[in-house]
Image (cartoon, rainbow, N blue to C red; front, top):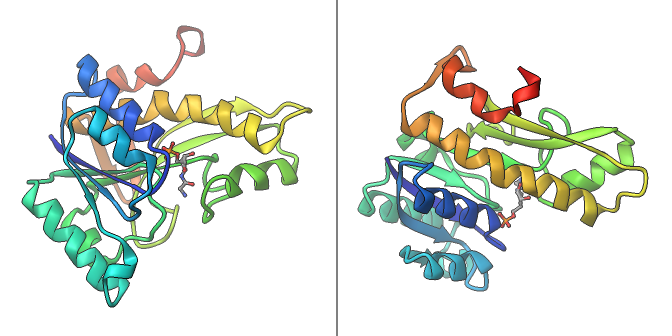
Length: 215
Ligand code: GAR
């Protein structure tokens, strides 16, 4: 599977994906990392892992549409078959979405459908404000409705009484790094079925998400 990563920030999820590729637990080739900011840490991550990166900043284009047309050209040129959004802070427009139907995943730092829509650390802050006792992260397919595409994988973490946005975010992030490569591998190995917006994963491989004692 030729995988492109799209990122805007620090790049720790991009790094987790690249690490899994290097370990052989994710059987994909990362053919491009596309970034909409020139100062993103994700660019250093790409460099460190020998992945070609492209910076496509909003200010160099007349419109968001033009900016994403350029991203689409780059995705095509990299023979992209699948896309992982990894802290990518823009909403994908129909041109990219329609070229990769059910082939774009995103990771979000809450248990969707709770606390969707925002960009980290907003979802974690909302979870704290709401007083939930469990939060976590969600890997989902990207559709035109933000953070509402079919859910592929989730991991839960406890919310502790003394948590700050930072401490909760760090606990969630560990789970993001664990489940995102696993979910991508399900697609790379064709173990995913999508039926009326519902994702099912072949039972043998879906167990990978859970510790032994939760079966
Ligand atoms: C992650 O926590 C990711 O879940 C979140 O941004 C962070 C990116 O960190 N994504 C969103 O909020 C999407 N709405 P990273 O750059 O270190 O991977």
